[in-house]
Length: 98
Length: 98
Length: 98
Length: 98
Image 1 (cartoon, rainbow over the protein chains, first blue to last red):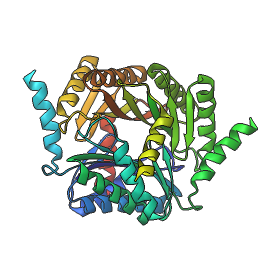
Image 2 (tube, each protein chain N blue to C red):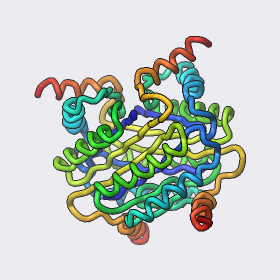
Image 3 (spheres, rainbow over the protein chains, first blue to last red):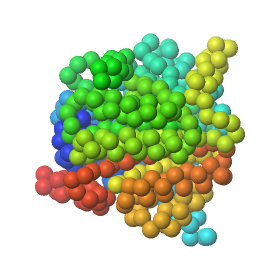
Image 4 (cartoon, chains in turn green, red, purple, yellow):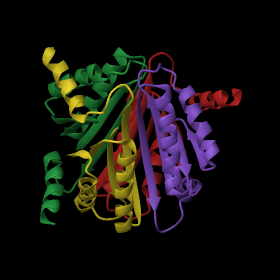
């Protein structure tokens, strides 16, 4: 499974980076492959572990803030293993050919 | 917790309603309060149960299709219980007053 | 086109309903068919008008807050006109038959 | 404005990379700063231009497929210019300090 998530504390000030940093610490401890992007964090790995890690981040931010809005997008396939680098490479190869 | 989700099978034809119906069956069996909207399904209840129900729907659609993209948005707060009807009513009251 | 959107001011307090109410006023003035859900607002109509209305809401909330995060999901099809009530009815009919 | 978007043709086969490549061509022609991630494309620049570029991609994929679902997330702020690299760096610096 590949999943991107972002967690927004509501009413906690304009700077979100302290909350993102807190989540990234949880993500690193999970051992899951991950990538920080300008708009979220992408995880790759076993589905249950990916979801549990995202929900651990959500709970942590909810400890730091009274209200939290979390967005998750999952890309899951049965026909072959998830591979977040391959997804990007596959597009770049198609662009290169044209 | 209140959460909205939508599940899209990739490459499974233009009509998505058979997949949505399959998920709504799982949602009804969960006993969670829910609302079907034109763009997704909204659930309200205990956080673990909400997430487990969404992931059960995701797994079911992945049994029917080789690839699935699932979007989830969670609104969670500590200061008072989640109430999806109150969220809508609260906006309508503010509109009525002006 | 059918589109759901939600607009979150960042760092503007825990209550979001004043901002949603402001947006709903803009949506009503647009004349577009719409539905307020617990997690967003659904619009139906001409694509350019739908996008312009959402961006007018976004700009209005950005006037009221230093930072805004806006989520939009569009469902667009060429084979028949968009119909947000039909989407819900179509699922309910499938459920009724089983 | 910083915005991430992803465009999914419905019923067009399991491989999405040809559609993403088509969009990335439009993005490159726009001259906007951009980054391809495993789950979407991030754009940075003038708000009107960012939205117009995303909608040009949406229209292009709708020419190639009967139905399209497009997700957009916008992060917009008045207090300083958008900077997608700074967002990532800001989190990494906070992690480094702890």
